[in-house]
Image (cartoon, rainbow, N blue to C red; front, top):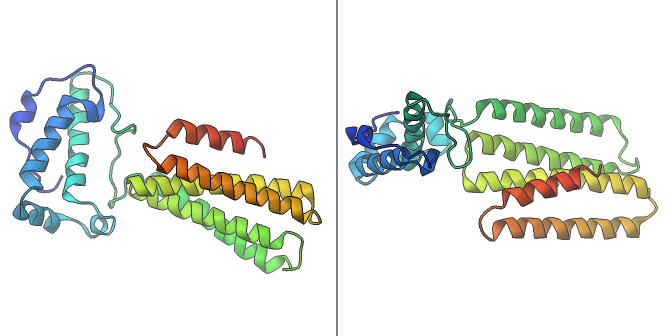
Length: 234
């Protein structure tokens, strides 16, 4: 934690056994004190910005985010000192930031998946003639997969509401289009009308899925069920 002052009052805050992570008195007390001391004045914000690394500026960490990060680990340490289990924060386990990235291991493996799809797309375009059946469909499939892994990299590097949703939506587009590819292969290249009907149905369902998850609080349970339902069919 860089140049963030948290009052010793935090040490006097009693723990609430019914609360975990971000709902605990420890976390909320820490956050409000940190935010008031560091993020409510021009001087405090300027001091914070001057202490930021380049990677943190690129990934758009701000003073409020820094307080949340500091208090997450401060609260985790308090829980551990009291013999309690490590708590979750906002439904997720504590993360150790590396070069501004929240989940560097997930970023690394997402990059590997991204590279694998990009390399295979290059190989496919180089070795498969453009007149081959379903050539354009598999090109489009590769582009969808690459796009999904790009947003996976972004989300795991910097977890915000909009990067999270783009990661989930693009991941579902990959799952849904894979099912579409299976159906098209089963139908064969000559049943263009049926293929177009299936494609229109897929676009409609994907649009509804994004709309439903965007209109209010994100329904993680629904999103997982839909992905499992679609994924198990191919």
